[in-house]
Amino acid sequence: MQVPAYYMDTYEEQAHTQVAAIGERDGAPWVAVERCLFHPQGGGQPADRGWVDGHEIVPVRDHDSGLVVAVARGEAALPVFSVGQQVEARIDLPLRTAHAALHTAGHLIEAAGRAQGWVLAANNHFPGQARIEFTAPQPDARLDTPEGREEATDALRAEVAEAIAQDLPVTWENDSEGRRVVHLAGLHSAPCGGTHVGGLGDLADVVLPTLKVRKGRIRVSYSAAHRER
Image (tube, rainbow, N blue to C red; front, side, top):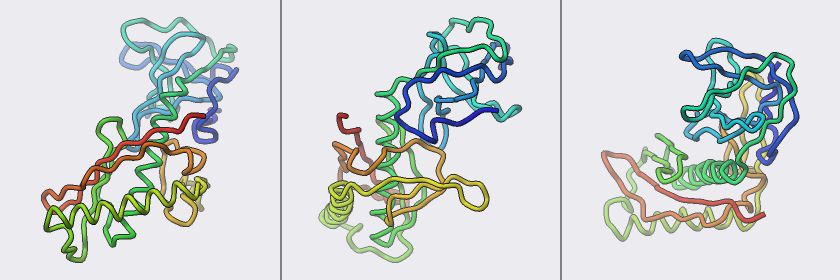
């Protein structure tokens, strides 16, 4: 049985665990560990960087087994592992916290946009590409002029800054259907498979350039980092 530890503790950097399964993917061997620290790419978030017994890996979701499996990064091949073998799993924690900060900031910006009366249309939490897109069910005159768009962006910035200053908690639970739902206190709740910071006070350097409107969508680009721990 595999435990998705990346959901339970964003900040768990390494674990002594054992091999749960082995197999092949596109002719290359993979290994799955019981206590899985590795978040695979998905939900708008890139995959973790990790190591199994010092061998650098990329985690991917194996649809046949349902497991998160580790494949070799680059051209190097993984060694032969055996089921039950004791191994050490480790992630690149600074990279993980960078991803978690971007993902959490995206949820926070979504909450701020909803407060403006907008509806989520799309999101992307990748570094250098992070953005939240909305539609406006009701006409919003601010979106028609450069000055108005700056005013609307300032409203988002103020909402985001206040929530961070209050250090509102970030929590999660499984709903009645087994879905993982992430909560930003009372501001926002959504089913989500990403990693998140422990509290909004962990966010730093959240920057929102002036929003853009293209083809009926409100695009809010952003950047964010994790505060130094």
